Image (cartoon, rainbow, N blue to C red):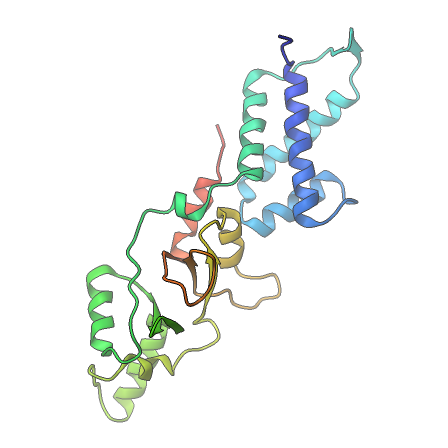
Length: 240
């Protein structure tokens, strides 16, 4: 069995990363570093940019190096080869959100439940976002921001009434108080991109609700929020 050289392993991993970036960004023209900068900015993994820049420089050195007997004169050290192979695996086959985040029971409510039941959930578990379902149909996302606006309105008018139904507080939703539904196969980079502020300055959704196939009226399997971003980003860090 012929042993694959470190240089060949490095080039295979580098080419795999480059091809993946071209495919994901639908860009066959831009140079590698431009692709890399766009990708890490889009998927929230800027900590990998220095490594990608170093690998690009090494790739250029290997490509322009002389060969002897069909083999490159220079060989990258094993640690570098292992590092780029690990990074290629993370970029091309990233972990899913369901695999990375710890299991948490999704706290959902019916529009006719009293707001007091939501307040109790906030006190007990410190949750901030709650999917609302009526007869298994998704009705919206109730957030602590919605509840705060509802409370402020109640205190300035009729007074605080915790027995009011959830749908009364749900009327105080704003543009940011929304969720997107995604399938359980959603990858970590996709979640990071979804929850990160868009380049146009608009607000990202307050939550990502994971269901079996991404349909809104399916049972929620997990809910992902901005507070989960540090865990998601850390799961993509393959620095050694």
